[in-house]
Image (cartoon, rainbow, N blue to C red; front, side):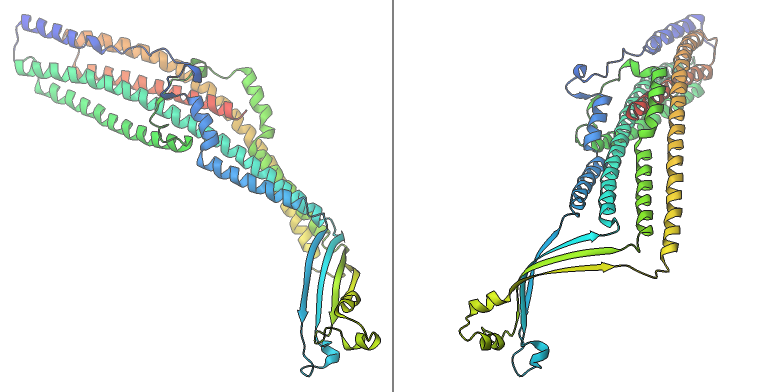
Length: 455
């Protein structure tokens, strides 16, 4: 179909006016991550991290474990004290039922006792040390859970910010395509455009709308997870403030030194060292399983026989005027016992020691491997951090070039010097540049928070 030059000129003017608002706006100035400047209904990433480090489900569970381990250690610390007990009992054997010589016609005891191991081959000391290790290990696990919860909260909050950035970009692209579709369909009705252009532009618009639905799905899932991590039902729905622009910087030399120096005190390394110390105690116990053990027992109270009479017959014969009170004074007394134990032949002792030596060697290897893995992880983090900073700068430059390219193609298409496919391709390149910028910013900020929480 042919068109007049005047009609072509009007279409070009209309297209230029319709696309005039399509140039992407520059990113707004980043808000500082300080809580003081955040709006009342918003949360900063730092606030999300702080909430998760105290309120995440795993943190609360590990806190309870640590309290239980501290109480267990406190209980074990008292195992070196004497054990006191109040004990007794009574047996009645009426005359004529059993041999009175065997049964003593019944007997009773009511005593207060004290038990004290004198030599125990260090078992009580090892129990105390093992309980102390368990308590320290529980604290380490709490520290690890706190760190991981904070890091996950940072990832989720930053992921939500990324989804918001992508959603804004896609909504702007959707509005741009809506204007383009309306203009092309107007041209189709007037005969200035082919129907294929309208179909192609609608397909592009539907793809962007589908992407928006996916972004919304991911955003809602992240909001629910953030609410769970922070322990606040509205935390995931609150507006997230943009972090400080300082988080978009690469790591400094001081950051590298601090992170590498912290590796030896990392929770993973500490847990491996505690496990190694526990195996060392187990080896000591295996080596001393045949040591001499001596126990001391003291008791004082009442003990007597012949419960068929208030005053036993034999005592009454020697003390005709004896009363029940005299019988109790006769039964009053105290005793001391000393027991020792020393195994002579124990065929299982040598294999048990060999087994514990092997497990100790394995624990030492795991400690060294854990430290090496932690150091490698720190170097990997620093590498990711620097690479993300470099990708962010490249993405910013690419975004600027994509904006210029779209402006040029828009003018060419308005003048009829380029095709619709070229214009849509330039639009996709701009969208891809924005997505790469959002991804690079997300990776850089995640690396920043991982470095902060590993310090």
